[in-house]
Length: 261
Image 1 (tube, rainbow, N blue to C red):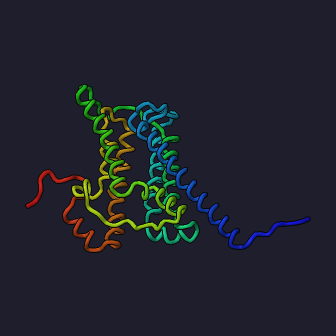
Image 2: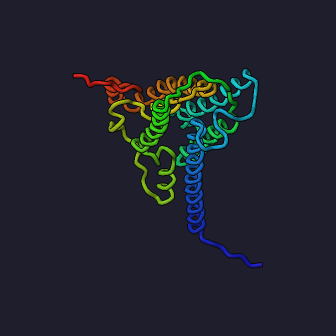
């Protein structure tokens, strides 16, 4: 029985090309998964178009529904808070290649968001309701404006780097990845966390606020306030006085109505 042997350099090159291709597919597939779940979530929270939204689902007793919903939101918050920390990244990249670290973060976050959408338990009732057509239209406009702010803010940061696509593409084609630099432009001149502001606007802009949506908005708001403090401690450690000065000049979430002299 005959066999064909290949030079070690050719085998290594073929393996490397296959690995780069797999990482590229993984990064792009994860991003597509995120886009699908993110788009569905817009309909889920607002009650638009999608078959399952925040006001419907499996009927459950009030106490059980609250417990399940809080656990789902807590899992999402914990994953974000833990996997985004530099110490965790240093440990995690000993297990997974650094180039897929961000895509893996996005995959876990998206899977947990999909779990919230899938397993969310409704809490029927009305906390407040706006009936004026102009008021309803204004709140719906604010809702979509909030999501628009979220999307726009990701591009101000570097949308494709944020979701791991740039890392996968750069690795596949052998490009040198440039670390993100601290910049202050557009929305970031007015608030330090426009992405979080967009989420809060969307979650609270409700013509009809049910107890379930109030729980969702309240828990996420509490997490955002905690997450901002954790994230900023990391940013100060990385950027030092540059970020400290930025933090003194620019508010976190609510833009100032008038400029200071």
